[in-house]
Length: 271
Ligand code: ZN
Image (tube, rainbow, N blue to C red; front, side, top):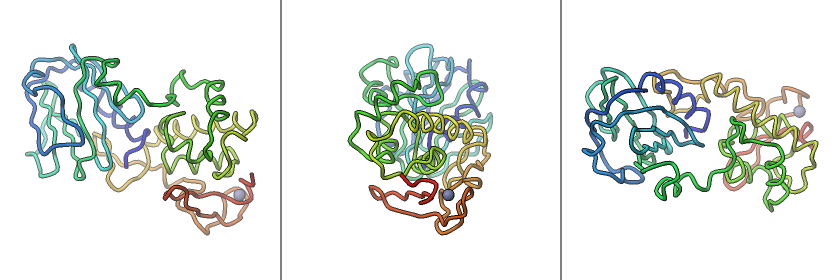
């Protein structure tokens, strides 16, 4: 599943190229997770001003309205002047004066939704519940710490939920908790200020590094210009059950939390 770093890498791969382009035509395939919410023909002639990101949503600012794009479980975007004919899993083609933006999504959990603006009811339905944005100035320690104190969940579950901070998906949660030396099963509310500071820093560090490296190497992911990422190759604990911890040589352990895999070092993350 594309996570926040992959979505950010995707954004960077076409944001400059599409900025200023005029929409010439739209071609829709099978229904996606949510409907477009506007007649495709009404978008013809609109201009793409910029591409931003909020959580795992890409926001294409048009000169009137905004297109929210989510990659779902298996979606990927490509943007190029000349793409081959649409295949069975290409469900959204937006032809513009700078090239075609194509959503390829075999499982169709992705979506492209038009909204009148970022704070319109349509957009708020999707964006309204999102937590702090970890790679922005919005991610202040005080707010993060208050969120930890108010939670009744384990720290891993809280991070994964995305209501306090977005973007810490399953791979990143294991890595972040390893760097902060916090046991994934610990209750968020019991984490003191010093450890919370480490965790806050680790979230920024891990996500920023993942973006720099081009996102995780995931089966279905490739950025809009076709480059795969390398983050997973250098994971400290994720996917390394039984292998020696890179810090202390203790075998890395795997546990299940809410049906998701969690990897941790029992010695480095002893509480
Ligand atoms: Zn260790």
